[in-house]
Image (cartoon, rainbow over all chains, first blue to last red; front, side, top):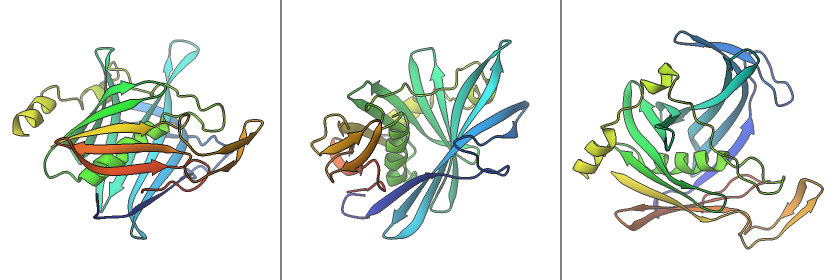
Amino acid sequence: MQGKSQYNFDFFSFACPDGFKENIVGYVKDLGNKSLQFLHNNEFNVYENGELVGKTRRYMFERPRGFLTKNQNTYYASIWKGQNHLIYPLNVKDSEFYYLIYQGDKMIATIKIDEFTTQKSEYSIYAINEADADFLFIITTLLDFQNLESFDSGNTYTKPSFVSDDLEYFKNKFDPNFIDRIKANN
Amino acid sequence: MIIKVKQTQSYANSVGVSVNIGKKTIYESDNKGIAYEAFINDTQYGKIFFKPAKNYLYM
């Protein structure tokens, strides 16, 4: 990226198949054996020298938890220079937080949150060497940026919304040895 | 490949000027935003600067 490319971004809400309603967009999508209610979507576009090269959509959905309560979770679908990716936030062992990046059925990167506080955030990206570093850097900052609730409501941070590891659909995406393999080959 | 990404400027501490009426930001100067830097093998790889209330911008 440095000295190679100039990127510009834009970021907006988009309509779901059932139509757009003031900050609430609802439709049901079947994820494996789970039917989930989708609530709201954002789209993030990346332009390289004026040409659209990346498009990332955030999907927020909720699932029942107990009698009256619901969990809200998030995942991302991203196209970068013609390649499709899915990005899953995952909480492992209650204290380790990751984003898993898949290209098709292959995990190409794991982003580990090293620190996330009100004034500072740091991430380590472990990726196969063939992965696009520009994409990984941009998507990491997008993920961090989206954890900011709102710039015009006191500049406060919210905690990242992570899928708990009891949701099998996401848990099965985690490879506990992936980071060690990347470290060994670095 | 291992990439380290750090937020190097938080929005609250950025040096720009913003004007708020109620909860709505109506003006922000060009330097108000969030900055990130990436490093590969301790060498700076790139910088990203997000500006709220406008299109977000890479610098």
